[in-house]
Length: 72
Image 1 (cartoon, rainbow, N blue to C red):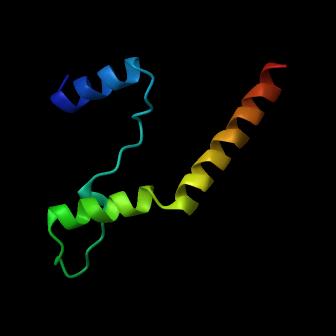
Image 2 (cartoon, rainbow, N blue to C red):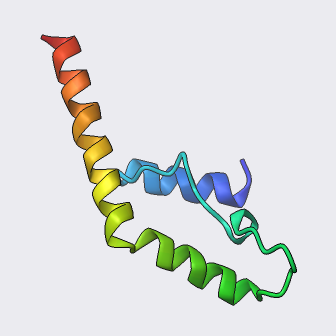
């Protein structure tokens, strides 16, 4: 198990969802002008965006409803 997998396992055991992680490599920079720090800032801006957060909580709520209906 590599370092990243070990770190994910520690977080998973602490109750965190780590199966969908994003990295600076996911930031599309057509002209390759952004630094790694700027790409990380772009990710930060995307994930702290109010609309993004609302959509994630909405999707979680819908998923919980579906799962709850299946176990009834």
